[in-house]
Image 1 (cartoon, chains in turn green, red):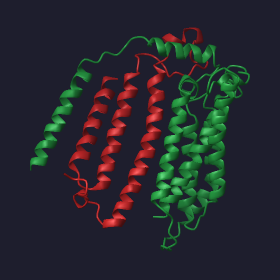
Image 2: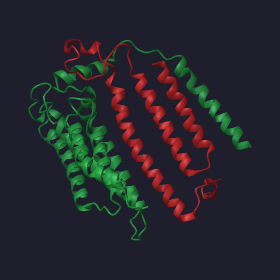
Image 3: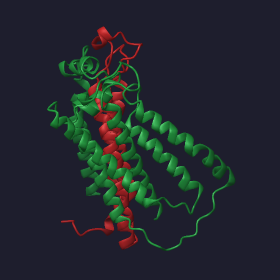
Image 4: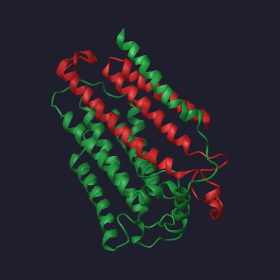
Length: 225
Length: 117
């Protein structure tokens, strides 16, 4: 009973704390100075159509590197906690509709994922979204075939290669003295085409491969339970 | 966009209430996830500007006047980061729950009192 009253008091307190944020909030009419600089710089400096992508990959590139590291740590933690056991649990075989549909759809879904992470600088999308879509293709494989086994060596090689190459691209920027993770180390290309915006598509493809293989690893580990 | 702001705060409060009041470990994780979503909606709605389009500068936007035509790109970038971290943290919490259930065969938080004072 005391606990319930305490919870109600805590919720009331939070409500009172948050209320001025809603009632006093004023939507601004113009972009802030920093946002205007990013929007202009995305066209003038980086040659990238998608401003969100230029913020994530170049202007805030170090944050994204940290984010990828957090994702890697979570994957490592899950793999450590849920160790594979060799007990055979009986699972029902998937229906024929699911099996036929998945053999048809898996390649197309992977292709869509690749399209989304290679066009991250042109359209809404990017490495994280594309990686998640690739992982859904492998989830479909796991659902349709109960005895499906992934080659963990390949998954690990893809993951470590893309992570290491991402850092190497950043360090090349340091060596050429333009700055860590600066995307101007290769020619910027023509505005609005696939091969433009310097290293942004390369970095986003590497992030896509890394996120895809990590999430596939998580799905495979969790299936063992 | 004030509607999205209120909806986000409501989801945040519902999620925190769920985390505080529920006994089931999986329901606590669900409460965390709801609060997480509420925070994302709040951040995105802060970046909204009236009568403007998405910050993608293709042929639909006049590039010389882009600053007057697009919404704030920074909240979107922050939320993209937050969504991925939220996914990873939720997956990690659920695997903790699985491990705890294996130890005690119970999902009630009342059965785990080692750290209670």
